[in-house]
Image 1 (cartoon, one colour):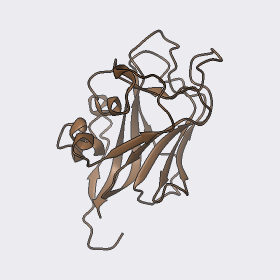
Image 2 (image 1 turned 30 degrees about the horizontal axis):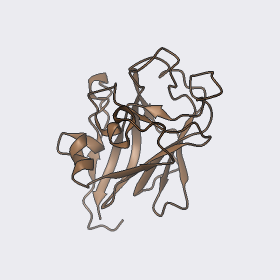
Image 3 (image 1 turned 30 degrees about the vertical axis):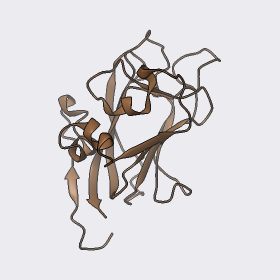
Length: 191
């Protein structure tokens, strides 16, 4: 980053009503779906678990409908990556909403890392969670503060990568990365 770039701060204000009013929403001018539909942000995943409308990549940008989700195939280290294209972001907090389908143990995230990259080859761990139970219910959201304060960098790519099983004890789908929404807070600038 050079001194000519204008940094925009989007802070999490600790108000639970604002879990999903962060950088993606700001880049979408108040509507996170605008950010992906207008090509401001792109995304991709290691895989897509089901060929259906309720399990599509773009569903992760519909912060108001927790029945629409993203779900990967059940493969270890499944990931979902945000490409901020012409922006660089430095994350201080992030919110995740569990899916609104099924029962209490329906493949909710509980083991993951948040990683950043500028080339999609070298990834740096920004935050990690193990055996996190706060999302182990239907339609539950939580905001997490970044633990790794040593990472003081801006990244083009931010991804969540599942590092262990989800909340479903079934061996068939325990590695599905399955969530309704993710939002980020922190600083960003346009390149």
